[in-house]
Length: 253
Image 1: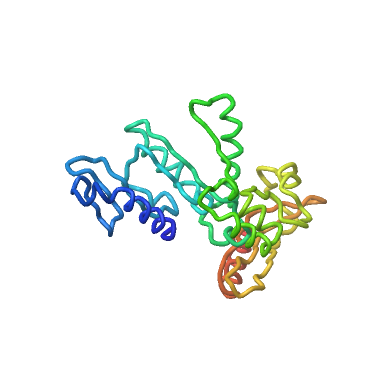
Image 2: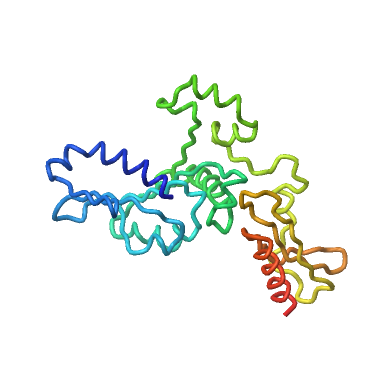
């Protein structure tokens, strides 16, 4: 995001200021590029919500910061091929996604970063030359005031503290009736072609801060129910009402 770029840019320009002042490096504030003159050796900071926003670049070292907010195709379609020329490295940095951040995420699966971390953790046991995983809590950061950390921690909810300070991946919403394990254990890849009934269920947003309205299409055959599509959308009641009508007609057809 632009906020991450500002923080990153301020740090690297300060660190490289002597070389920039001596004209060893060229600095472009608009494009956020620091480059060694006459070469393609450079450092570039940019937003990357999805594959299209990452196109047209190359990298020896690709750092995807706040990976949980990006769409998965930023890596799979564009990020990985960017490293081919120089057999480069990729680093994924993410914060466990909160319920609020999930509403602004561009990801198809808001849990994709956590799932990749778990996968990489297992792969690092058999492919240590290719994968490595690291976990840091706020307590591990030597640049944070412990006094301030203790102070703000008392003002946070238990869930926020575990996610933001301890950097824990919380897979389940507290008090949720359905767990992710229950959903995964009962998941089927394809629903029957002929269903006895198809409905659209809407869980309206009740806050004023732009939370997404939950919207799914479900079908029934006998005693079994099937979720046919997740159409969760963020917007006004008119937006999700139209989305519900469109989803209904799409599956009725």
